[in-house]
Image (cartoon, rainbow, N blue to C red):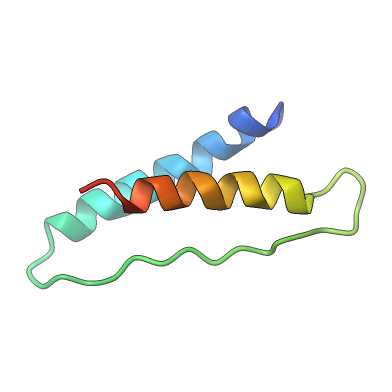
Length: 65
């Protein structure tokens, strides 16, 4: 997805929500992780500021049940 940072984070955050919902229904508990590439040299690319905003959003999701 293109657009501003909030719009670009919509898909990865929706994937995390879906995976967390599936994990909650699993027979045995398991940890959910998220692998990122923190910065891209290409222009336009992912900046470290973009990555930190995503990390903050992911951390906020980890605090929710």
